[in-house]
Amino acid sequence: MEPIFEIKHVSYQYPDKHALNDINFSITKGEFLAIVGPNGSGKSTLLKLILGLLPLQKGDILVNGTSIKKINNQKGIGYVSQKANRAANGFPATVKEVVRSGLVQVKPIFKRFNKQDEQKVDQILERLNIEHIKDKNISDLSGGQQQRVFIARALISDPSVLVLDEPTVGIDAKHVASFYELLADLKAEGITILLVTHDIGVVADTATKVACLNEHLHFHGTIHDFKSLDEVEISKIYGHPIKFVNHDHDRECCK
Ligand SMILES: Nc1ncnc2c1ncn2[C@@H]1O[C@H](COP(=O)(O)OP(=O)(O)O)[C@@H](O)[C@H]1O
Ligand SMILES: [Mg+2]
Image (cartoon, rainbow, N blue to C red; front, side, top):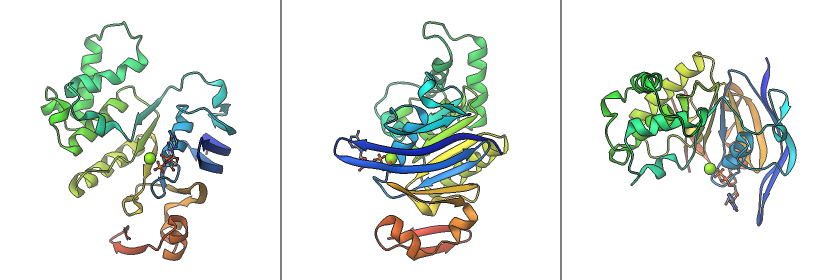
């Protein structure tokens, strides 16, 4: 299996905080990787380094075999940032406008949107079951609907990799289930998925690999091996005791 990203000896230091320490692992094409760890464990920092949004300080990241330092503009990655939902509140744009703005990254800024673009917007809205709200203002939607809008925005450029930072925060359980179904469909289409969450309870069975982060990479392996870790081992990663409640297949964590 070909690696799409190779993370090699990556460390990252903010002025007064060591965020990442000697991280090493690879992400394979078509894999669904869940990156888990408590708040402040460096998850968003790692994603930003992989996306080229933060400069590398130490180590290297290879993207399809080429050092990220030599890549000006990463194409083919759809990104839903941790702040996406929060930014939506009070933002004066319709669903259609937000989704269409995902095309700006692949089009010269001054080029107008054409009929083909509009068709693409309609297709993706339909796919995500949000076509009936396309003229609504984004700030008037529920958290689950806003989430779909931002995923639609990320998917409209036909990315081969989808990166999601804490996408289930503020979403109710019913919508979380349908969100994971959507991710399973995207994975089946061959899209590589990187999903960050601080809630180990929501690591879906659709994930193939898990990376447990807390400044260091404490665990990297299959979802199966992750689920066989015991509470003591996970508690060490979290830095405080954790108890699991087993709900069907998923793990729920109560602190
Ligand atoms: N821009 C920043 N400046 C200084 N410290 C930061 C900055 N961003 C994050 N940090 C710190 O780095 C650590 C890791 O942050 P982050 O990667 O956002 O963690 P996570 O996404 O796992 O919650 C945290 O202690 C956080 O406070
Ligand atoms: Mg974060």
